[in-house]
Image (cartoon, rainbow, N blue to C red; front, top):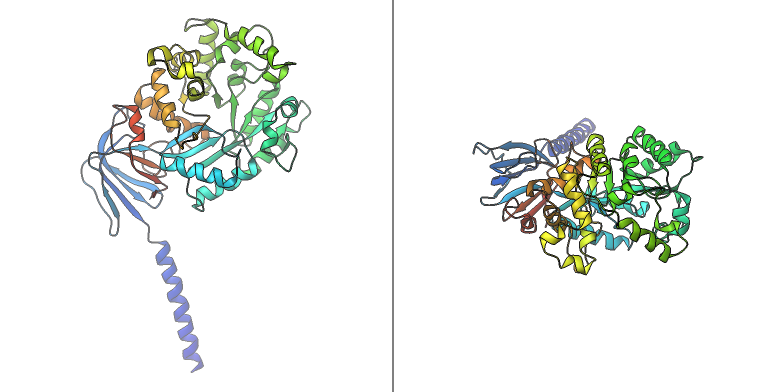
Length: 439
């Protein structure tokens, strides 16, 4: 009797183990058929079908022959358009509560934004959001973030870092590091990496030699290097040559490059009035596409593969005089002109809003795409700016950014053609993140 009991127990264990293995071996299949696929690789869309296995694109078929595995969830998308999931390359999501950040990321995901690049916030919150969004604990855009690297003067004079370092001292935590010539850069970068950051962001009061040293160390530890296009006293040309993967903000970029003598940041002046006076003189500097400094900078950015994260939205949305301009007049605003010339010279343009969500819940990346086309980008290149170019800036181009076999199934299904009208990125039927439709 004892032998029979043991045999029965062993059989139960074998059956349970075999059942678990079978469950693991049973993938989830989704078929998206008969849609126009805009893969961000080709310049045009083509009718075809996708087979998604779990979270990855298994096969893409353009010959009309669609195989649907047994039990597959099938979407007939005739008349619809599929683009890669969008990425907002410039957000700040931790200046409120954790719940507010979670809600914002959920809203963004439903608007087709499957990933965001946070450019400096509370590293503790960002680490949690990154994990929870990736594993599905929360439903929202995937989070990639930087730590902030700057000179001590920035952390001493700007109140914003302390807002996202509550309970600690700004500039002395892993997500915010004040650096000087004597800083152990290896340790500073290692702390950023240990936190889960994708990159360091170099901000203010870092000279060109120190910029290059910290950028070199970050790359040695396989982190990306993000920076403003201007890091006073370091000029844009020294930033791209120093190793920046992404340079943010097109506004005044070229004036800073052309300025004579040392350039300054807003905290380098004894008063706001003095800072405004200096900035007005800077903005009065004239330039065009034939200016030697302009050609030199954009050639260097192209050759160094430094992406320009233009953030045109912030030069448009918060200025009523500009916001009410015609597209033709808008194209003559300095930030827009800079993007036009950079694009014509072959610089890669990324799409970042620097203001992810408005008070009414509007996700502003879609406006950024429209503004990029106003600056001269074709509709397909505006889509690329928010997909494959931004994926490259994250170092994630092997996983996301295009619709290709083997890549993560982050997808947006549209009712109307974004190659005809870029604003059609707002006309969303479905959003898929990691192969799962977002409810």
